[in-house]
Image (tube, rainbow, N blue to C red; front, side):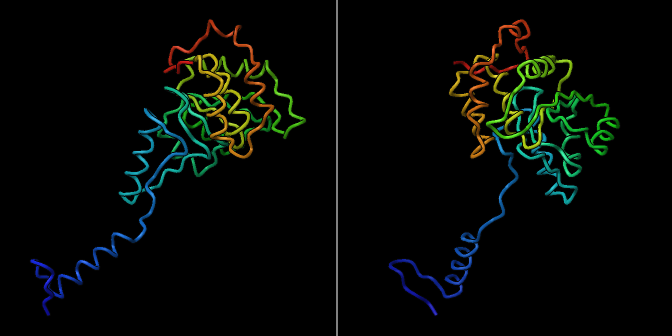
Length: 224
């Protein structure tokens, strides 16, 4: 059967092939691998390694909840579990900064020991507001660890990678001379519906004067 369409002649078999192509194009495709936040450098390399592993039928690298790159050599996330260990290996971490007060899990401790990763733990109570009392001295000591490039590559984490981690990163951004609106925007991107006014107020009032001599030399600072 031949159909005349203006000056173009289309056979029935060609018509069927065209329909099949249209159906194939309309079918949904699985999402490509992506991180929860725009990343670069080491984090991008880790993502590429994950894609290569998936395409090659090898072990799939799974990043921790809310994983993202903060700056060169500095990452953030929720609490890593055993499913994330292969991914963490790709970061070649030198240190982990934990903001949870509970004893570090045995499996995680063994992972750190076997990979020569140093643990810095600054326990901060994660209770919900209005009972939250963010210890400024603890945040300051945690920032000293983050600012010391000898600890890099370093991962900062709490339980969900939202509030405690968000406060540390927000105070780091003040040292990087970010404007408050940009600091709050980044915090809210991770905290989402769980964003706390008390956290944002803490970041706004946090005094960075005692840390200015440690201003990050590793950073790609964002102008205010």
